[in-house]
Every structure is written in structure tokens, then in C-alpha cells.
Amino acid sequence: MKTNKEIETMAEGGRILKTVADEVVTYIKPGVTTNEIDAIADKLISKNGAEASFKKVRGYNWATCLPVNEQAVHTPPSSRTLKIGDIVTLDIGVYYRGFHTDYAVTVAVGKVDDRVTKFLETGKETLEKAITMVKNDEYLGTVSKFVQTEVESNGYFILKDLTGHGIGRSLHEDPYVLNYLDREVEKTYKIRSGLVIALEIIYSIGTEQIAYEQDNHWSIVAADRSLAACFERTIAVSDKKTFILT
Image (cartoon, rainbow, N blue to C red; front, side):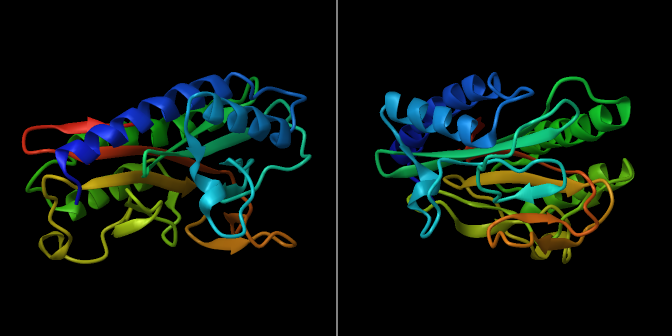
């Protein structure tokens, strides 16, 4: 739980993060490597007076995670060159004045077919709607149930081992923010004023199962190697309003 003053500080960090992320996305294009994208992100974070949150994770040495296609989350940047038809997730966080904020978006590289466009639009629109349901005195399970219903009704699969999370002085805090309902709604976490969470929708076209990529202990992929995507925002709850920090 955060005080109003702490949320104000996180909002400042969130504005920096969103500004950086919006600029970084413009560099996601054919012929660019994910290493190059990460270097741009790292420089922009520093230029804006913040630090890269992900570099504070033990053993992780990059400012971003940049999964491509079947890669779902935590994929480190590499010499991989993007090509037309790929989809890329920019997952990025900043640490500012003692607090973390987190953000992710999946975008297409060049032109993709209608099937992929629909897949990405489903995640983006589901997140936008789910954010409006996060409010004081609501059960988190209501949000989880909605996300699951929206994603699955469109024919896609929640990657159930991967969740959103609380966030603040640590990058990952309680509570877990599930994208599916694992118990009765009334038995899930009750949202209170002061809660700050990273609502993170992670899903795939073909399976709810995950696997670790061979020769890369960070990178998690859809087990059937179908396309995966992630959309994430950091949001804060007050008595009267929910604020989108990123």
C-alpha cells in the first residue's frame, strides 16, 4: 500500500517511463536488432533522470526485455534482427526516487495479416477495459475473470504461469494479479485505496502452457511456439479514482 505522496512520486516516474517507451517504439522496425533498441532505451532512461529497473534484477544486465513472436516475457536483447511480420514486446521499467514503474506493449514490425492484428488488438483492448474495473472496494478476481473471459472468448489462451504484480519500492511486490479466476471472486484480494499494481495481460494464440527457451534461462516462450503478446500498465487506486501511471 502506498501513501498519496508515494503515488505522486510514482506518477512522476511513470510519466518518464511512458515518454521513453513511446519514443523507443518508433525504433522498432525491420533491420534493427533488439540490442540496438535496448541501447536506445537505456540512454533515454538516463537522459530523463531515472534508472533502468530491470538492471536492478540480479543477473539481468539490460534495460528492457524484448520478446519476439513466440517469446512471451523476460527475453533479453540480442543480435537478433527484426524482420517484416514479426511482433515484438517492449517490456520496460524505470526506477525513480526510490520507486519502480513498469510498462509493456506488443507491436507489429511492418505489415502483418489480419489474424495477427486481431490478436494484438484483443490484448490491448482487454487491458484498457480491465483498468476501468480496478477500483476501491472491488475484488481483484472480478478483473481476473474479465480478462480471462475476453481473451478466451476471442479464441486465445492465457499463459497462466505468468501474472501481473504489485509494484513500488520493489519491482515485484504482492499481490499477484492473475489473468484468470482461480477461486470464488469473493475469496480474492479486495482492492483498497493505496494499492499500486502492474496489470499485465500475457497470452498466446495456441496454448496456455509455457516453456523456457533452450540456451536462454531468462526467456519464456509459448510451449507450442505460437505467437505470444504482453500488454502492461502500472496503475494506482485512490478513494475516488484509479490513476494510470504508465
